[in-house]
Amino acid sequence: MFDRLHTIWGLLEGQRLRYLAALVALLVAAMLLYAVVIVPQVVLDGVLTDEIKEGSLPERVGLWLLGGREFLSENLWVAAVAVVGLTLLAAIATYFRGRWVAIAAESVIQRLRDRLHGHLNCLPVTWHDQAETGDTLQRCTSDVDTLRNFLAMQIIEIGRALAMMLIPLPLMLMMDVRMTIASVVFLPFIIVSSLFFFGRVKTIFRGKDEAEGRLTACVNENLTGIRVVRAFARQEFEQEKFYSRNDDHRRLDYKLYAVLSWFWAASDELCFLQKAVVFILGAWWVAVGSLEIGTYYFFIAAVSMYIWPVRMMGRLLAELGKAVVAADRVHEILESPIEVVTGSEIPSHGSLAGSVQFDGVTFAHAQTPVLENVQFNLSAGRTLAVVGPSGSGKSTIINLLLRFYDPDVGVVRVDGVDITTLDRQAHRGRMAVVMQDPFLYSRTIHDNIALSRRGATDEEVHLATRVACIHDSILEFDKGYETVVGERGVTLSGGQRQRVAIARALLQEPDILVLDDALSAVDTRTERLILEAMRDRHGKQTTIVIAHRLSTLTAADDIIVLDHGGIIQRGTHETLIAEDGMYRRLWEIQTTIESTEEEGRA
Image (cartoon, rainbow, N blue to C red):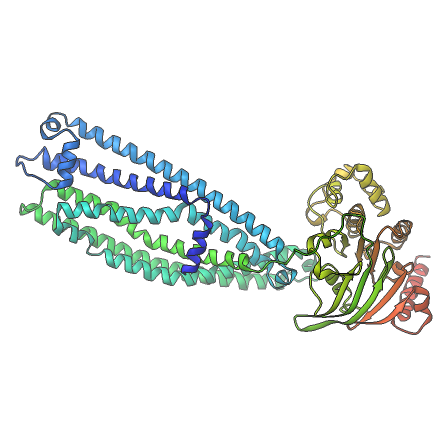
């Protein structure tokens, strides 16, 4: 609990003086409001009464400030002006309190969002593998908004409740001890019930937040994979899954509101009892002549002013519970260790050759062996093809080369240097990767391609699209390169998305180009044109190609065949089809299918 409060305190760094100024304004406003209540008391007990008494210290000070008994009795309008003036000053103080708190809270939350986004971008891939996207999104949006609401409203309301409760106590004691005791007799019960309630709701809030995170994750998965859901007619299954998680969320909501109902009922009863005690005892003492009517008025007004803010402590503590849970969930992300980026510097662009070496690399993912003693050398400027069935470890080779993971055993080298000693960001900046399902932003085609290299000219973009055989297709669109492709490139076909991604990678002019089944959605004729254009660029960069369609690999300088995490064959296309093995069997199957399809079209 105190650790999380310390976390919230840490968030206020840079804005604490503004919060302090808001607190001072709050105290000033509270004192002015109680001064407003003292003015009628002074008039009732010091001016309108027939019997002249010395009165309490607050009454004497108030009477002196208003000009004295004789002056005030002749100019009662001064009391009215004082009430209006004090109320206006309290309103001005309240305005500055709200303004300063709002500015501070928004600044704190802006910095928190920036920090969260930056931290998420620096977390290792292993963290993202284990985290649910929906839950992470929930922490970055809903939980951050909970903190914003607390810092903008509830945190200062807690201070207001305490100020409204503590400021009148000295005044009340100076006026009448009996009435002071009567005015606070139920206060301990209200505070204890609020603290008990806070302990209950904090646990419920955490469960509710986690349930909301699971619900968000379910919706996110469903919308992201909506085409898969439709293709396999899985709408009913997805609806049942959503219903289940939604029901969990509703159940926890119901539990929360049940606790809230009990608290509000109990606190309302205690507050009304407190006011009843003051009203009844005060009236009795006024009737017997042991209490002045003005003092009676002050106690009724003061109790009415502080009892409801104190009652609201329960709600404020509930909001504090939500804020503590939200801070805990956000802090879990911020406490997660980031990927170690620093390492030795990489030479400036163009000075790297781009050779790649895997030296006895073994890797297991979540205790499951993926690669076993993989060893190969790829000279700079040459092309390596990687073939194998699904799950054989092809993509893992790329992940290790990009340092998304580090090998358990062995070394991966680029230009003879162990990549674990290199700066990660600079190392990855020397490579370009095109995935089977590339990600495109909801921007224009030109922007999607040009983002790989700032300052790229239109001519350079067009050259890359010609190599990727997408230039003519782009010109067929009504707006050409200014066509907006929609979220994740949804307005383009699978083959068009892949070719745009290839153009983006080529524009970067990387030292190492990786094509991870990046031509799977392209027809064989277009694939041949792309490969021929890339062959003309042979030697410009080292290329690693992963593909299931073996026609993609025929021009590769070297081909390795993976199975169960190990290399079982190696050679050129000609040598591999000449020997018995998996490669030749795959080649024969694919050529037979292609021949059958051609005969069918004929």
